[in-house]
Length: 148
Image (tube, rainbow, N blue to C red):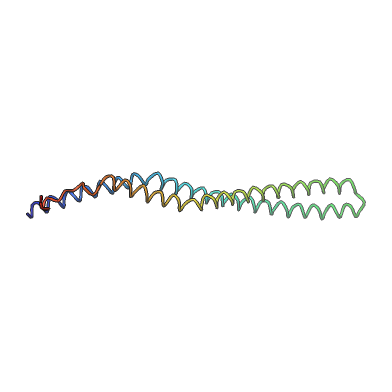
């Protein structure tokens, strides 16, 4: 009986190992996708922050130019004032474009971040299904069970 128990324990250990390995392999693509989504979330957020900072810098430059254009206008240099104001408007529009792009990057990052729990659930489901397939309930017959 002791030998039968030891043999059964060894067989169960091997089957559990196989189930664990199968579950790990099945969940791997979901873990990779989740890691990639996390990387992209960080990358998009960083890029959005850079765009916001650059846009704010351009807006500040545009305000400075507008102030200097006002000075030229006041002193009677209308043509130079108009040229400087056109540059200020161009910088301001570029800043607005950068801010718009930053908003879309933040939105994409939030979308990817909100998908991560779904990847986790899919990984758990794949892992459970593969482990069950590798170790169905009837995989280890009980040698000690009564044949009757």
